[in-house]
Image (cartoon, rainbow, N blue to C red; front, side, top):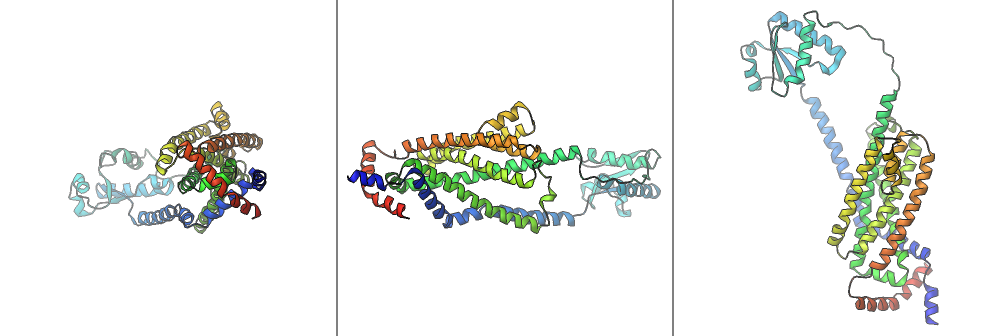
Length: 420
């Protein structure tokens, strides 16, 4: 009779999974550790923004390297005039050219550069017919074409006056659109990979902590182990979405505060709303597959050091999968891209890149259906291994005694959770 009463008090797998998911989600969400976890990725963004702003300011304040002209007065004036005329049409390709002072003209060109006199990248001496370029070894090839073009313009072999062009501006071209969408695909893949790897580690740390303080044994005695696995996995997925919302909100404010917008980037082939929606779906699929692996690994580890040792191969494998998906992105429609889209670990990355380059939606419906099947298989396999391994933290006899002890003491826990 007591056994029947106890079985009736136990929750179903779905109910127990919901209890575990709610417990873990709220416990992690309102912990100080999660707050610092959220703040962690924001520091590089802030530091990078400050460094970029300061670097831009320093670059603006720094004088542009100049080419010094050490010819006679007439040739020097002609060289400077030709350079200015070319700069109006060719921009920064033609460096600014300036005349040396009388004091500098009394020095050898090599001596001027060696003693760092002025802001000269090179010195041009001789005549336009036979110019001599003096520059450091790595700068000769950089400047000889421009200097030769300016000198040739004074001999009538190159134009000093350019025809006025009628400009016909278009929004884009086939080549530029393809190039820009590849950049969008690369950015989406990189962001998806970083978020998956960064947030996937929370599953391991939470499990190892609960194994260390024996909470996992209390839960195992009260509810099915499959429910513990499902609850923890989906709780971490929910926590991950909270983290993404926080980071996305802060990043969006910084992004918009800087005067940028999504229009500044090439729109993916499927459009931004569908692309972002697919990104969320593919993140969930990738996270569930990786999270199930991490939970299975965590069930075999008793310490943080063991977790790090066991998870390293999975991390390196995931990195290789990312490189595989990135390589496949450059070969749309090929067998390699098809293989990347079918392989469960690379499928989210490959299909997100495809969304940026191809506007067809039906391949995503097939890919998501296949990924759901793969997630179900991996989660089921992970739950099976989790159930078999998580309680094996000591000798068999000791574990049997622990199980019986916690089985008797945790019946009240199951009833209380069912009432809640």
